[in-house]
Amino acid sequence: MLIGGELKLYGTIAPGESRRQNSYSRNAWLITDEQNQPLGYFAVEEDDSVAVIPG
Image (cartoon, rainbow, N blue to C red; front, side, top):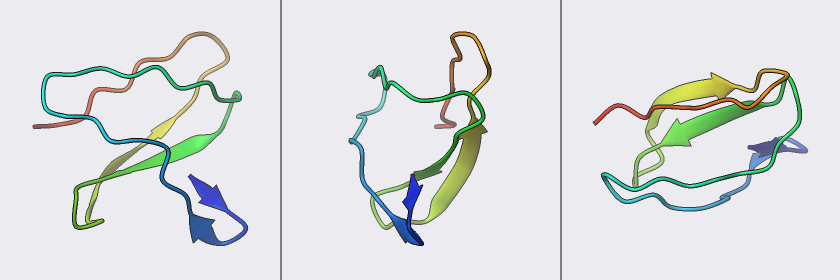
């Protein structure tokens, strides 16, 4: 997540695992690999949202 112009690590997810993360509606999350290369992004909806990270 971008905080004041810098990315902040919120966790690591191994292949096949899942993780819950509290967030706010309309927040955007950047998903990266271990080398910080972008895999995609995820925008939070008003209700519960699910992000699927490509393998």
